[in-house]
Length: 388
Image (tube, rainbow, N blue to C red):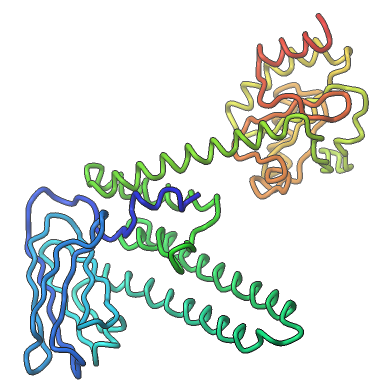
């Protein structure tokens, strides 16, 4: 889904507001043994490459650029057609770049810009991954005519995915370590190629939201922070749409099995409840809306329990003490189960539960017929099924 929104920050390298005044950034250094005499500095903007400056390296390989910038800005610096180094410049900074040859520019020594060093860390780590992936392609071509090519291909594909996931783990670690850094925007949108994003999982929206929250708090008026914020909103809308589609597709399907311990320690299977309408309800003692909803469920349960209605309540608590105490305090007399694994409980993924309270109403055959009916809506549904 991330791919659908990348146009919001296609190159991601030009960013955000810091202060309303202009200031000069100086980018200078020395490229020894350069293969070209020309060096280029190009601004990277959300709409594509921006203005470019160029100059001729002097006899010692030295160069110096000055740019007036209002906000922190990303640039690409390259010699001739060599591989560039990405620079994250702040107003009033003096950034010094020194490299041995144009080819080694992306691995240059950097002074005066901690943010640029963070960007360099991301770039160099991605280089390592891309070289690993390239080596797999070489192996594949070498064995293309081998009679075991199917097995070889499967092994290479698994290795390929492992390298991608290792890179993803690195980016996630980077984002968690530097949530207030502009460089984390680069970590969000890095790509292996034009079709493969590092953060490719639906759950990765949490990292977009994390950086959005951090930068919006610091720079609410910054144009590229606002773009990231808009991106996160649209990603959430798309996720909600997909969830709704899954919910609709769940209707008429058999409810997945749940087999979890009760407070007494015995395992209770959902499938053992026969010939009753069952409300599978996800909750927790620490969830205030859940506790408020419990009061309504108590009344509904008293009304319909003798008519063929049961509640199978799954707690996402962390401790048995809190769970059992809440059951007693709220007067809950129906079936209770929990593995006390909080959001790590496998059943949350099985039922696509990412917020609570959340519930599924099952018919007499264990088929899902409704989702998230609460209060009066649940009461009316049960009246239609079981009568007054």
